[in-house]
Image (cartoon, rainbow, N blue to C red; front, top):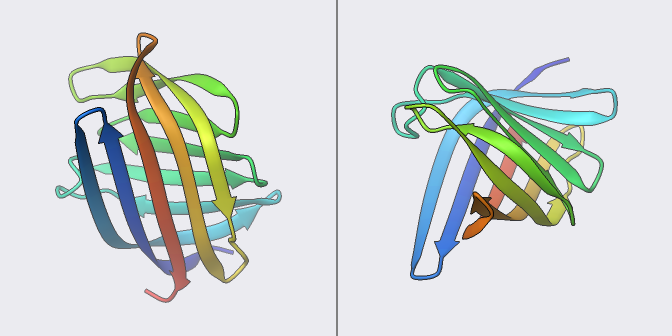
Length: 141
């Protein structure tokens, strides 16, 4: 059963000489299917992906899949200790990126909770940045 939830997201993006922090608070849906938790929300103009829906699928303790569909289509797979080649829509076309999962901390329950994950990003096998996501899901909305 899908629940309406409040979702807070904090993304920290660090490269060799820069760090960017983005925070988002939104309303979305949360549900469990086949032992995986799903967090889903509509993107807005603020995020730059207006007209898209983002869904996070949380499998066990070691894998998170981020899928974006609609105006922008992307799929990023973060799996601890594994590098995945993923496609990412940058608005003017798709680009292949490498995602190496460094850490996943999952305390989601049927009522909500927290999800944190870190990954390294590379483009054409050239290191680009370290990325960290902190997501809190709370019943309500």
